[in-house]
Image (cartoon, rainbow, N blue to C red):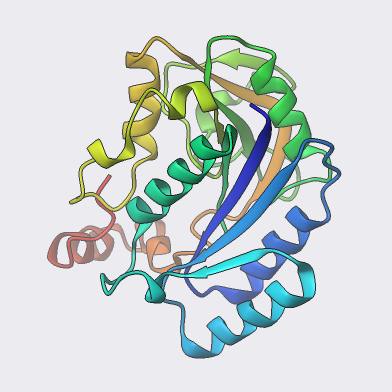
Length: 238
């Protein structure tokens, strides 16, 4: 991999998003990198805020309303565009969600970690709360702090780097378009193709679960309502 392409899909939750963006843009990175925020039909007001931030901070903003009329979420389209761009530039693809705060060294360290393993398909940072305790979606990693290990469990795209070798081995146009999210499918596909997925519990990122999709908090506060809304609105298909 000659460089790393960092992307963040965004829909509203503008204050959390701006924290995510500022942390990424403040990173200490030696490998060539680009940072693109994909605005997935945020409100007009929040779109203007993102456009202003792009000019001030120097990242690229793509308004998906310029590319499609399909309503949010357009995660699959984002992945397909980003994959094509990464392959063209011989880059790894690092997905950082808009409810995640990276440390200054996270991106470079994750890139270095990924290239240190010839069989790496996906390299993921573990997520923690503000007190540095491992939290959702990596609760299975509790007890394995400050390590690097292969995992057969799925890795989330909270902060995960997909290597160039893996990107060239699996076309995201083969993903199921009826699903909303694809991290489970993609991480399992990496294993099927004989790559290994590595979880870096020594590289922690602060994650505020579902901060970018507040309605999903119902999963914990009112699960019956959550699953009912998920069913009738065909939301959140994984």
